[in-house]
Length: 259
Length: 245
Picture: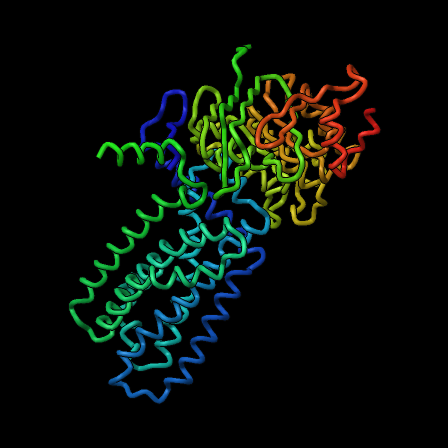
């Protein structure tokens, strides 16, 4: 977050954080408004989800009901991982093509607001696609019926899983957006780093389908992963985009010398 | 008016790996003046602008704007940048593009000029409700300038602002810049178009070898540029040195 306090009276830090949240909301609404006009991301992600769903349905239709609780979580989160990579690869497309990221970076906009807005839009698209996948899996596989029986838990689980994925992924998508032609690296970096949250989500989904009490524990762990992803993402976003100011690097070197 | 420079660069250097682009550059920019910066392709003009705008930390040296070395919200609310790319959202109308940045500024507690008059000032009032994606490059350039003028910036940084403009557009830009200078804004114009710079700027500096190599004498006070400037200008495709000779 920017180091300078704002305004002649130097407002408190909490007030700055409210500025960041308000600006993040404005940027997210702006992104969604543009998305509503060209439907580029929504259409791509939705059709991709549908194709994955149809292929999974055709491939695993003969799977026994007893084996389905083992396979359905994998289908759901594999779909999220693929759609997520697709979405993240394109979430900064407008910024890259029209260089609008630079306009935001030189404007009085908290850098963390850009991160939060992009993560939110990614999460919304990912959540929509995941809910579509959940609905399809429920219709295709009898063992996925608990998704329909426990809609609140299902919604919380999918939301947490998508949020963690968006939190980690947006940071790297931003870093690669500022260096053109390196989008191919996104998947290479993205999958290993999102693996912990995907694994937590996978295990939590399985316990939901099997009706285990451990579901809430896994959901809690997933929530903790979310918090960690967003704290690290918010902390690293500005250095990833504009580099580390010389003073901070100098201070770190001086501290190392003192030690 | 305070005589101390609004922007002060001291010993600013920037290297990318082993390639040194800027080598200890000094520059002062005062309120109410237009400074032009000319240099050949790859001289480091855009790198310098990025450092001034806080988009890139210098490898060494110090950049001070309004007495502060930081580039936080408070500083960014006081200057504006117009890049050689328009940096506008094509799916938004001209007025929506301005509205977005005005709202972001408002949330940060900064002042804004009225939107439509700002567009009209740049000759874009008739296209306020058109999506920016339908604009010509010159119109986009003017939209970017309108966005920059929204907050009555104390410092205006412009990178190749003349590139996409036709002659009326250039005249309009020159007039707007003169008005901004007269109200006390400090303006840094970066270009490789010597003719355009000389016609607008109070002084034109030559960026070469990663430092400010000297000041370009302004026509018509001087019959011709010095041999070094002529040589440099001769290497720039858009500059006709014979026009100044």
